[in-house]
Image (tube, rainbow, N blue to C red):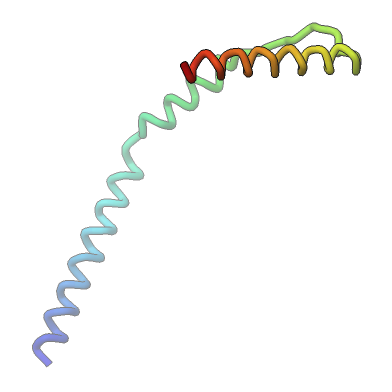
Length: 78
């Protein structure tokens, strides 16, 4: 019976400490919130003004990219 009373006391103290810690943490301003506000006001905007590639241009680009990758792969294995 004594053990149960001790466990009850330990639980009560743990809950009291947890409530106090959460109350203190909510009262302090966090650095993450202030950083988010600073980033939200200075959001960079990227505008891309380019024509879309035609189907033939896409195929040529893919072939050139594959050739470049194969050339790099053989050079790195030496």
